[in-house]
Image (cartoon, rainbow, N blue to C red):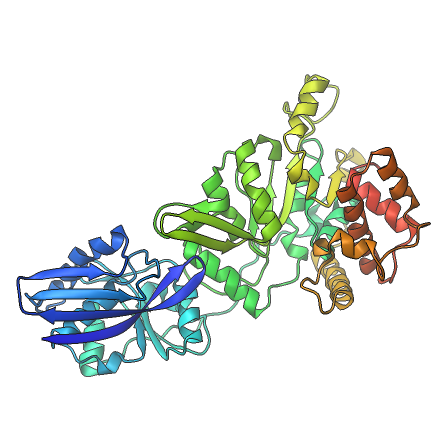
Length: 505
Ligand SMILES: [Zn+2]
């Protein structure tokens, strides 16, 4: 009887893929068979598509219809294939000439009434379509602004199935995305708001300049959270590629604002300590949702009251922190989401959480056990470990005029990152926080023995681990980059050691 095919788009993790939807209509008992490894929601598509077609005032072909999604081995999730299935069925039944939608990819979920509903992950789908040379894409009207963020492809939005049919049949144009302000609303958090805490602000600046993970210890009210929240304000803005990548993750999670724009500012995620492992690293049925770890990709993951997180939840962070990826095991294979984050931990010195030692009722073993929950492999991955003192009354009442604002610090951070990037030219990383210990311990970056003698002494005495040694070297290089010098001195090593061990200067 009839055969037709159209293009659709699917997602596997963060990767969009072109999918061909083909339909064959033959005489026989009325039926609609879907094949091509569809998951449960695709089977539900059968009823939705039929109802939507009828409610778009089109006649449903009462014949034997076979719909196939290719490539067969690609896992397909979700409801975004509905629109393509409806159009291809009408095409195969000879009720719609599909020439007008040749070279066009169709994405959208159908409501029973023929409405086209928004879907998650439109941005990475459109990116994939543009890369594959697709000229035009039709998406749900509610996703059209988001789809329009991708350059080099013609984007149209449709509210109803009938609009797409009229477009194919009579060339009635579909709306293009509105031009949006690429202006992203900031949160106005500035380092100048942080009272006192010279030490904390210094550590934060080093963390930003070298992309080092950071742990902040100190009593409640010492400003740990305030500092952490201001780290994005001193991180370089995301370039085009990074902005698209980060926005794509938020598109899949469904966390973009109603009027989406490219995310240019380093993201900040602060999951609560009751968060489950799936909330933190990602999960869920069907198309797995990215967790806080991936939503913080190329930004900051802040774990406040870190010892309160459940141990298996903290453990789930270890591998992704090492790899820069979260790998989620699914029934149809594995899904990967990016997770290059800068980790910031904050912890009170003890579980009672009072702000001074005199009022604290915790016994020494209780205090040890509390922070012990963080120790081991997680804390070992964190370069900077700083203990903050309570803010003094003098600092609280002091003048704020001489406080350094985020903009000034960001300038220094950018200069330091440029210096580091030049030193690491030709390597897989550009920031000191990613430099391996072997690289820093061997020529040409090996420091004179006189410079590192204190470190060697501590390693011999067993008070500094081999990993700790490497981390001190990394921090020292970042101090040097921030100050515009070329080689760490003994003083830089001493300073780095204090920032590593939490010792007071
Ligand atoms: Zn206590």
